[in-house]
Image (cartoon, rainbow over all chains, first blue to last red; front, top):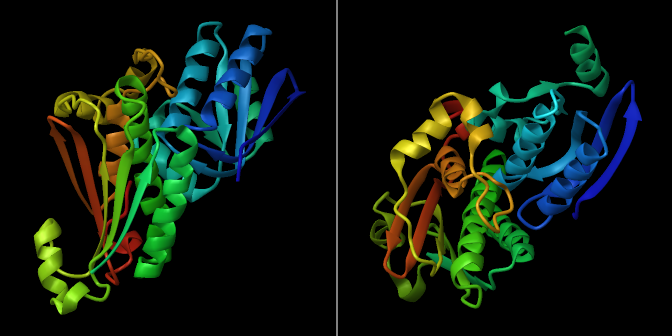
Length: 115
Length: 182
């Protein structure tokens, strides 16, 4: 399926909800959304990937790009993902060390607030 | 041996088409359900890499895929095992995907690849975004993902493009048991 994007604010954090496939065709839309959110002053992002059906290295690159942008403002970009098929690509590329990956949006928010 | 050939224009939208086709052929060939995700992702990576390379160098040229089920019925009555040996030298009963592009090949730098994988992962944050690239990550990351997913991989850069060959065993033990990726 195609990519569906939504976002909302919760507890001073912008939650980005991603649904569908993130690949070389759809990733530019996610990149544009992340850039737009940062440009509007949202520096604490949580990307909820629970409904992502496919993610490749192009999508990883977009997430890394988003992380670079928020870090430039001392911000954070955390992920919510429990799907093994998606987590596998983070492990292969070593990006589990780069992103905070949580089981729920609340866990991601609580972890950031506790720091 | 049974072969499905697919030629796509260098358009990002067609990468999904290639993934779907490869997954369908792999399923029909008898690839374990748990391995289908790996086939889908590896084929997507190979095609994404080829599309990006073509868009930079030769957008009008097509990209070719071959999906080879070596356990399928032999064309012309030849023995099934003999063809597989010729294709990848890895014995009978494999599903092989060959992605051939026509973009000028840049020799993969093994050390750079390994740096990205085994070194400090924060190196990703310093990766230069290539002009026109979608991800901002080096194409070598896509190749690294393929190396992590496929059972056997050969990357053959040549004068007229790069050929990425990847294959998985048919009907073997579930990779989750003995070849899991950590």
